[in-house]
Length: 486
Image 1 (spheres, rainbow, N blue to C red):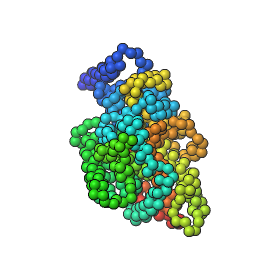
Image 2: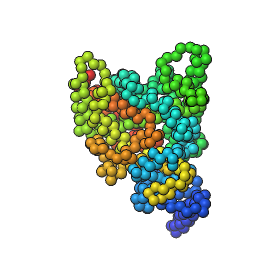
Image 3: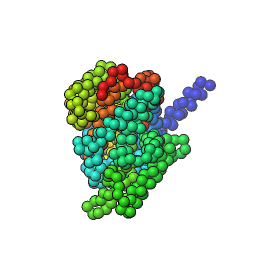
Image 4: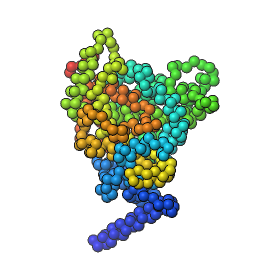
């Protein structure tokens, strides 16, 4: 009986090897007779490629085992060929190579997989042309970046942080991540859609949760799979946004006065040099993308920064002393934070940067070679995807010794361009980076002064897809400190 199993295993291994050779032949033949110096790597199984090994690693306790398997087999070349998300790809892992891919718009364009485009939107920033992206970014980023824009939202953010922390401290056991995501969603909703009703906000936030689980999943539109649930969530989100767009357009036709202009109004009213306005699909896709990115990243990083500070009392104390010093210098008549005070939060911003590095909210972004490109001595053929692997940069021990250790003092010195990429780089740098960091800073200011986190499951396992989070969403209690600051 034992020998039969040996034969079966041997046959399966042979078939796997044969199929992988067939898979590579399929993609090699598409390159034609032209000779390429392709990076080393493994194209995996036919059609599935390397996705099983990718998902297996990121659903384990060691997500970095996926890339380390390439390094152990092929050496530290910095680039590796693979078949990912249905496309022949080159995984890019070094700071210089990542910077090149993200900043060279002549050689690379957005290359997100079809699954992500279908979920986030064909007219969103992840798939539109460079010129269209430039125009829409100029139109939208003015609302969420720069000191003047941030000053408009500071009071609203602080009021909601204070009231939320007070409420959570009286709720007993809560999922801290879930509650913080609701807070950050309320903030981004205020900025982009003014004051939509509570039921609309709850419906949107619920659908966004389902959408996110499908963005990094395999494109299998069958009930029970994450992509199928995400696709249904997108349909529901589009329906909700369409009703809001319809109402806004109706008000314009009836010449009725509207409340203060928000991002939705700016998109509906925008027109190019030829007088062309955005259609409903364009408005909805851009809004859908912004609202998703605007609360997911800041919500997760806020939770993890809170977690890390609670886990490292020495850093918590240092952060608290810095915030107490800011309060001490304040005029007796002053109420609330100012942008000047936020700029003085030097150590707190190091905490935020270190949290973004350790967690690496977006593990990868996608580009596509517009022509044959040489990187690290290897060719990325025209049409192949370039996967900029942020985790490999942020957790590189040659750049960050003991990379998985949380240490804000790493940021006492400057780092080179390409070594820290929490918001990307180049023309497609995340436009909401200033707003996100300010939100996190305001939350941490009030948390370290007045509250503490008591986790119920401090050794809870972590999941890494679609984003790094505790399996229990950080179940715990927010407790008021015995001596609080104003």
